[in-house]
Image 1 (tube, one colour):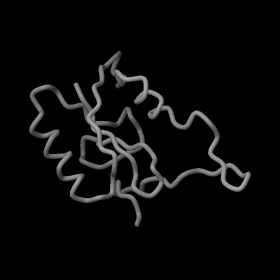
Image 2: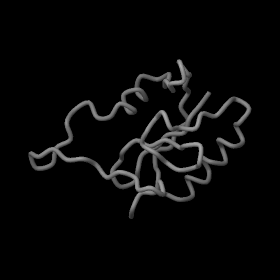
Image 3: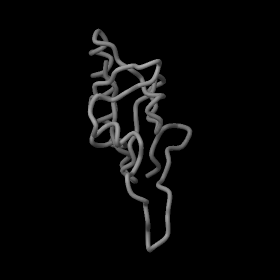
Image 4: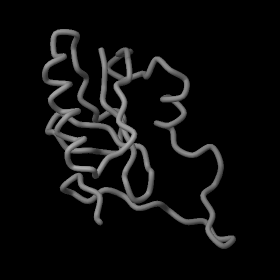
Length: 107
């Protein structure tokens, strides 16, 4: 099983393709592609590359454990959990840009 993941163009935040075709921040909302859905996965990947709104696109192998999506690679588990150090800007904590309801990064 696989999911599609990438980074928002503006903030670099981790996002996942959901079942509706939008890019979301929640790993558990990601669409899980079965082995027989390679054509659908590749079509979604190609369509996203054409927009330029999500970069560093990757196909990640996952497993399901009691209904939870678990990335197989440690790197992706860390990305899904968020930064491992506080985000600061000029000494103050800040929150990154989040996707709007339409799942697109504002440009």
